[in-house]
Length: 130
Image 1 (cartoon, rainbow, N blue to C red):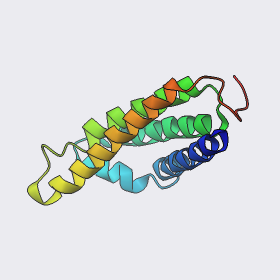
Image 2: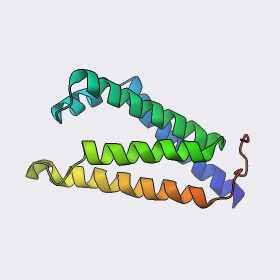
Image 3: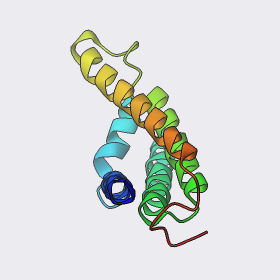
């Protein structure tokens, strides 16, 4: 079970590292999307980069098992904020409603699953410590 937990942490952490990469190195599209939802250019850039940093911290924390409670907090803050601000399916045009609902529900499910990691005794097995 310890090995399965480590593999799961690595897969989950890599998901978040890819998200961090997209929010920083490839941020232009996400900034444009944020602006299309009413954010001012400076605010959009700050929000996209800020969420990228949250994803980076959370992803590294989950992979390494280093201060996992703080990493989990970063990821849940990311997911709740992004879900309600960027995927408000209840306000989306009919043509985009299903896509936004899927993304919203995926993010809420990820937040719930991430919160479940708090139930795992710390320090986590195969972690670099606290």
